[in-house]
Each structure stands twice: as C-alpha cells, then as structure tokens.
Length: 486
Image 1 (cartoon, helix red, strand yellow):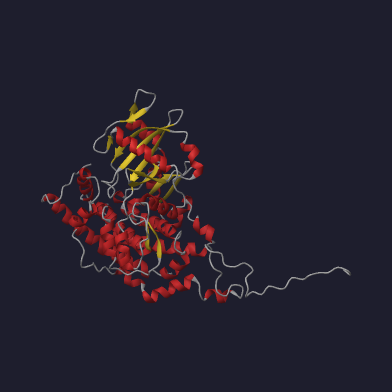
Image 2 (cartoon, rainbow, N blue to C red):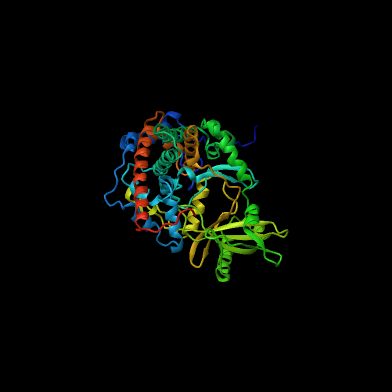
C-alpha cells in the first residue's frame, strides 16, 4: 500500500441522515436509528390510542339530532333541487318503497344528522354513501371479477366514522327488510364494525405495499368468515359475467340501416335524445379523452360514436342527467359508456360543522373519479370526466360485468356475513387515505366500538323508519308527487 493515498470516508453518525426529508414522502420517525423503543414513543398507533381519551369509543352510540333538522319531506325536496323535474316523482317513488330505499336516497340528511355525533378528527377519503347496496362486483381490465365499493357520487374527504355508521345502519334496515329478527339485525351492524376494526388491525401490521393491495377476492370470504354467503356470491358472480356492454347493446339497440346501430326507446328508463343533445354529449367526450389515462386513448380511438340515449339510474341518482353512449369498433362490436352528471357531494355542506374544510373542487366529475381511484384497489380503466353544456359529468364503462347483492333479500343467516364482508372492504378503502396504524390504535382490540356503533345503527334505523313513514304519508296526502313501480 506504500505510495498510495487512501482516503477513508468520515463515519456518518446516526443523528445526521445521509438523505434529507423529501417532500411527498414520510419523515423519518423520531429516534430512527437509535433503537425501536424511541420510534415507538411517537407511533401512529400510540396517537390513535391517545384519541380514545378525547373521544371515548363508547360515545359513538350517541345520536343527538341537530335542532335545525329538516323534516323528511323537506329534506327530499331540497335534495331534488337541480334535478330533471320530470324525473323527481320517480325518485320519490323509489325512496318511498322501503325504509332502506329511503336511506339510499338521503345521504345528505344523514350527513346533517351526523354533525351532532362524535368524531375523532381523523380524516379519510369517504365513499359518502357507504350503504350495503353500494358494494358489488365488476370486471377488471382482464375480465376477472373483483368486489369492492362501487358508487362514489358523494365521495369527499371527511370523518371516517360517517361511512362506518352509514354502513352499519344500512345493515339493520336491510335485515329488517329481509324479515330477520331484531337481534339478527343488530348483530349485522355489530359484525360490520367488528370486521372493520379487525381488518384495520391486520392492515396496520402489514408492510405498506401489502396493506395497499390486501384482501384479495379469494381470501375475502375466509377473512371475514362469510361462508354462509358463498352461494349468494356465486349466483351474483354468474350473472355479473354476462352483464356486459355487448349484452346491453343487443337488448337496447336496433340496426340503424347505415352499417350501425341505434338505441330503442324504452320509456321511462331509456329514451333517445334530440340530434342537438346527442351532438353535445359526443362533443363532451373530446374533453373526456384528455382526462382518461393516456395509454387508453389508442384503444378508444378504435371506436366510433354511433348513438346517445338518456337513461334513468339508481335511487339517489334519479333525476340527474345520465346518458349512455354507443360506440362500435371495426367489427361492429359495442362498447357502451355512461356519461353521468356529477353534482356536488351531499356531504360537503356539513363537513365544516365537524372541523373539516371543503377544498375547492374545480370539477365535480374529477372529484368523483379521483375519489374512486383513491378508495378502490382496481378501478375501471376508462374512468374520466367531461363537460356537456357547461355541466360536469363523470364517464365510465357501462355494464362492466357489474353485479350486486340485494341486501334486503338476504337470508337471516347471511346478514351478519354480508356485514363482515362489507366492513372489511370499507376498512381497506379507508386505509388508502388514512394511516391504518392510527385507526387501528383508536379502534383497539376489544368490541367497545362495535357495541357503540351497533347501538347507534339501531337508533338511526328507527329514525329512518320514522322519516320513511312521514314521506309515505306525504305522498298519500298529495304533498309531494311520487311515481311508483318504475
């Protein structure tokens, strides 16, 4: 080694990280490199446990309705503002069908009521309408079926408790509609929360990437002990595989005589639109191409737009402007897109009351699409947004092998299974935007939260039944117009 200069690098101390904090990434934990004990003192799990002192879990059983609560009819009338007037009687008729249907159409009213309930201040990307009928099957890019939340019209960043309480309440109402006894209904809510809590604890223990993609479909039933639901899921899956654009187009279109096809009127659900209206929707899809993932643009370029129709959808969504667009490829094979009006989230006006700011959205369709992508593990590859005649819309595939369980038709021994499955899926969705370690620390190991939210769910289900009765009476008295059976 003689004659050779060797430079020995200075030894780096553990107090001075070689790489500085990079914006957008997590900071190094306090005490990193000095032993795990120091890092644990400021862990998210410990912070979650500390929240129990400020907001005891048992307190979530409470329901203190705000003094300015509107009656059921006024709440429905307010939520109808801005919708297509001719369609609002259909919406009212669907909401008047059952208490569970009323809950489905009253996300804004429940958000108003939830402002009087405890929140921890921990935020997550919310579905905003996480009732039991808004979970379902759909196809991924390869045609495989996945199950997840599947409606994001009301999505917004807010208190995680709101989604969980809405889901638990819906299990009580769905169980009652299915004819289950009261203990089975309460147990469905209790098991929903328990599955949410246990899944959050599981996700908190996993490496971050594994937690992000956790609970694969083949593991979901065993993870949630939902074996009684297997037969129902198999039947829904078989039906979903045939629920495609091609099948819808075959039933809803006819030969147009010009080497193409066109929609056939099926009032009041499906109707053709004027040439001017169709042209406006088609023009809006030019802007949609700028929002869809760039690698999908060459795929869409292989399709030509052939026709546009107006189609009534959903329960809460009835009255919003919603179109189906028929596209055909070079072989005449169809692809149907849904272009659905995106209204402001019904939760947004109520978030400031519980300490959550409502950021400027810019485009409501963008809010819906980004919220969906933040919550799902796998999303529709053709999601995007558009503007038609100055109104914001979301765009997605229509009939993309979609299938859903009817919660109101479940057998009594399936109610708690369905609650556990949906509770687990909701936890996974929330864990994409909220640290699962923080929520797991708050939710804890015992069933204190499960009992509290189940009690709330039964109480709020009773309140919903009273609201539904009030709406039915108003319809009977002619105070509000309703069209049933549509």
